[in-house]
Amino acid sequence: MLTFERINLKPVDWDRALARFPDRTLCQSSAWLAFLEETQKGERVIAVLREGNAVLGYFAGLMVHKFGISILGSPFPGWTSSYMGPVLEPDVSRADALEALRRFAFRDLKCLHLELMDRYLCTSAIRDRYLFTNYNGFEVDLSLDEDVVFKNMSKTCRQSIRHAVRSGIVIQEACDAGFIDDYYEQLTDVFAKQHLAPTYSRERVAALIRHLQPTGSLLLLRAINAEGRCIGTAISVGMNNRAELWGTASWRDYQHQRPNEVMFWHMFRYWKQQNMNVFDMGGGGEYKKKYGSYAISVPWIRISRYPVLPLLRNTAALMVKTRQKWQAA
Image (tube, rainbow, N blue to C red):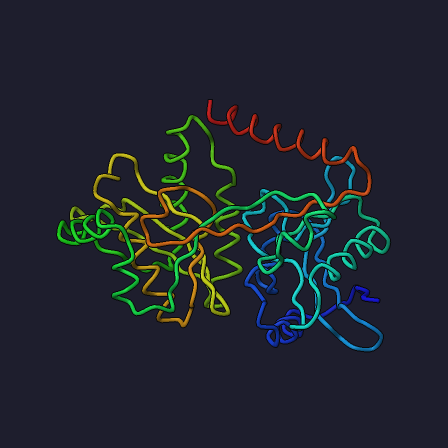
């Protein structure tokens, strides 16, 4: 029988153990876990998957406490973190590993609720066993030739990029502390359009940059117009053949200059040069189709020890949305 056992590893040892698994993601790395620990005030959980004496994989997540309930997330909604879950040897059943994780979370960690999003888990394997929602998004194939990646974009998107470049839009790769202010002010303006406040704080952006920038897995961009004004910003991350968008923002008054289209094209080319084969667009939004992307759907799994807990979870999510509207008022 498969069993998870909690272990303590130094960050360098954890990253070394993770490196031998082709299905690893950036959000399982020690730098990302440190980012989550700081921003979510949780406790890092690393566990090894064994069958007898054989090591078949690992798990990384964060244990948090909400409303007096212990939760194991990998990730949990609101963490601004994408795919986590376990890393496994190729012949290990992901459904069986999930069942072992459920036992570990409830029996060993004494958690009452477990959530995870595993990019490689098929819904057909869990449909009759667990509750889940589909996390729908889009990806761009960066393994294609650069000219093919560009050609796959819609005609209007390609025209917008060309027009923006001709009008003097320049994309700068940033590394200065002032980037945080530029990004968050623009993000606030984006949410204000919907009479909402941003879903995360300026401090979270600072924490992401502080933990990820030293790893070389972070790309910060500014879009500068012909007048020298920063009219758009973007944050993306990448590791192990996969890059993904973390956030974009731009001033509403300057969106007609198309800074977002040019920033996306820069991100595609940058991560392609870093040998990334896929760019995850970071969730849904039909407008993302214009970038030549294809649709994906990943199960976000929720397992509770008691039937009432999913109701409490949904109530908490509603409270967060309500608070977001109040903060913008």
